[in-house]
Length: 293
Image (cartoon, rainbow, N blue to C red):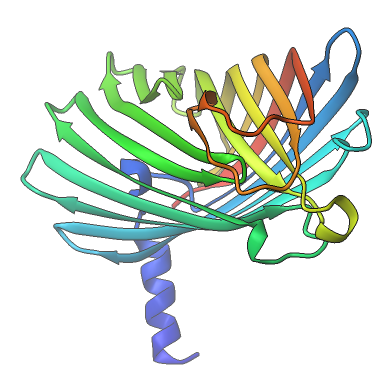
């Protein structure tokens, strides 16, 4: 094994990446199922997500890291226009720099292909970027604020947010992003923890140019999730969660040069209307495995 590869492996397995100003797992995979049900439809979305975090550079003042991620969404039981197998493959990179002892700036960008992967072209790609400023008030409290921009197939999406990490007690932690992902974590013991969170997500997936005339599907979710995470031997962890969709929206659009504007999942200016739409509420569950350093 050559010296360069040995150095690379040494860095890879010795540095704990501090992406999102936390300590993410090296590798993670999860499976989830989400019911789509109202008075007229009854379907399901099955999700598989896998991600790999890796370091790029780190010293006392700066940290640079990245993440490769793959998503699979299988929609079934609905109209054929919606019952599709959708995928996403993206690359995420961040740069965190310390301004002073208590202040940090964090920049991030992401690009990837999101479609049914039947005839991938440049129209299947979308991107996002943003920044965050954080303040370490004391050993138990860190706050910040930031904004991200996402270029979706239906238009432009803005996500302003407030970040926080508050260790209320040795066992109770309030962390995440407001309003899109606040989390309350209770550490039961060294191996078991209980997390309750609210999660908002918005995404769009391009359909085949040859089979579906480059239409795209937009999926918006707001849901609550309660989950248990258990640490196995070593650095292996498993999690199991159950939740409820407050808002679950699927919209089908014709191909266009969309100029819609939205904040989070809510439209501010809508210049193109969906040709079909499904709204529902229902239960969801998730099971996951992760490995950390």
